[in-house]
Image 1 (cartoon, one colour):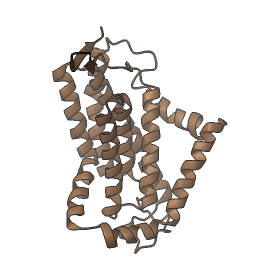
Image 2 (cartoon, helix red, strand yellow; image 1 turned 45 degrees about the vertical axis):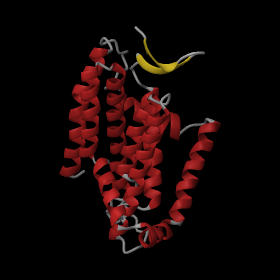
Image 3 (tube, rainbow, N blue to C red; image 1 turned 120 degrees about the vertical axis):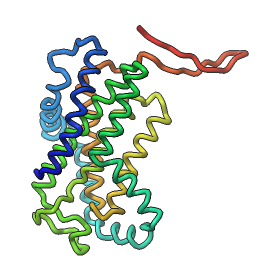
Length: 271
């Protein structure tokens, strides 16, 4: 792994330290013996033992559908790239995808999580602080998987391949997309923990999808790279939530209040 990659992952790891400590303190420091930090090895272990190498029929069917979808898109990688470059790419599109590219970078992720952590601290919002800590964890795990995959497969990026999508083992860094996996790893945590808020749920998944697609426009990844990365990030996000040592519901929720003669909002807080 290059120095640049280690440095970028280190940025998020340094952010995870104070955020996880604050989340633990706000939870009363009562995490179980398998707490936040132990999940950095428990979640990858579960990914292989519970999700990939499994005999569960439903999971096997799900995995087959995911692999089949990536394989199908792989057969169309060059056609998708050519269509995008000929019909979708433009200066305006470049501006949008350039912004999303920065947003999905480790530096962008650090800024986003830093803002949500600061907001949680200022508002004394335990649930948001816990969500931020889980999102950082999910992103770090997704990047470890992405970097490992890139070095094992060596697939060439579109901009370095001369248009040939079949160049593997060439020391490339295309499969799978770290931006896509990181975006979905982060946004899945936020979306699922705030799924009772449709605007948050759909906007977070929308940002993740747009970030993944931006990598096609930047010629940094083939379509199959972004799809595979998105699926891995989504899966790791759900595993992170499954093993979460934090509370699973918000203490404070804004709910609609409807009566015969009134229409408004009600603030509900549980102690």
